[in-house]
Length: 305
Length: 296
Image 1 (cartoon, rainbow over the protein chains, first blue to last red):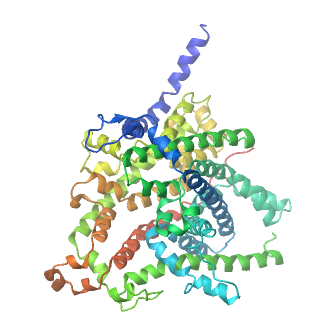
Image 2 (image 1 turned 180 degrees about the vertical axis):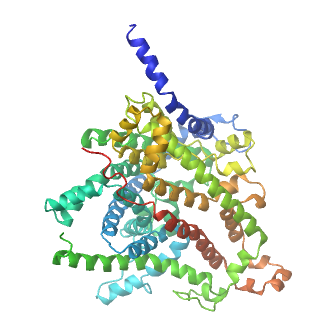
Image 3 (image 1 turned 90 degrees about the horizontal axis):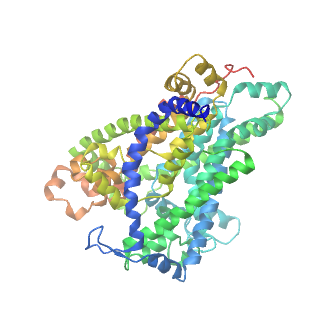
């Protein structure tokens, strides 16, 4: 007993600097995140704007039962997951690919120009971009369909056809975000020790071999991090984009949780229901991130955080 | 070196062309919006503008730039970007460093990780957060633009992973020489983390510049609005019927403005700071800093 006690006191004392470092952030987090958690109780209440925040009626899980009993809910949930999963895959594979391709460009000015151009779409809002997309993808006058027609094929209804619509969403989102997303991977690539490449060249490895054996494995921790965080975002399929692009014809495949709640929530119990949906999404996202972390740990040996 | 093999040459040609094609596709929508922002009302509404302005007019920009409010909001935005960058970056580093240590170095790290992670997934909602800000007397105060979102777990996790990539031997050498944790952080980890500091800085700066909703939520008066908030309200409220005859006399170009053109001008203003700060931060994306310092 006596041999253990002093040791504990010693490392506690040694770790005080760490606790002090974290302290300012902890204070801010408690103030602006933990205290507002009280608001989650709204999910279990029948919100009446006329009453005060603490005088609402408690209705337990009624909001959640209402949500799950809506006939289209399973379809909407499926759409959300489908779109989000493919967006996640696209938003990791494509930026990584472009980071690797950009890394092969030797001329610095060309490389920097390309980079700047690639992340410009990230700054366009979906309101503006939707207008551009509707124009380009128009079945009658759009450029894309003009090219398709010149090959003798039928024009594709990118925005009106329910089977095509999710892919339009996914591909346009990947196009919008890949440039910005690649920044993180490029930063990871610059951190790689050049001596690895030199050693590989001496051993006779060609450039492609070097990419597969050095570059990609060195980026693996960051890729895993983005994957785990991406999985946590599965409930967010992109309200902004879908709201600006969808129409009743594509509700069957394009309606996600957020757009659905936006439409029906206007009828009644808006805040309570919206909070309940938010809570449902948060719980799922938390479970997925925790699972992703454990899986990455057991399978790949990386502790993502 | 294999750099001049035929396979390699073909790859370089294809790579160059492919990247150029994609880059052009990224540029075109922006060129289109730029053209719209310089085009007349009639042309924009008739959807005639493609990549070149039709009936060139500076109306949309004049509408925005001739307003005194623009400059005071701009000043507020510059302040929030500068302060937000320092505060955010400092907090990010201060959390990422201890959390990047192993459990045996910092026993409480697990607790702190989950403590912060929960805030990434769960959200109390708009109203409760507003109430907290209100109780802290931060409503209508500049710091309401900085403090509530000062801790961003995504940046912390990024920084944490980059910190873990630095060879432990360097840190151990410093500790053996008697350096404290804070000294190791400042003198060793930070200088070696320039690419990640530059990346996170870029994200922070851009987010601070583009943030508009918090300005609208926490500020009561338009003269305290940061630039993006003011632009949103200006553009959203733009209605050609509301313009007084006197305004028209001072500024005949107002007739040429449409909501869509004004929005396009707004987007142009959004991208400016990135185009400025990215080249500046570019030089920190340097490789090989760690090279040679650790003998395996």
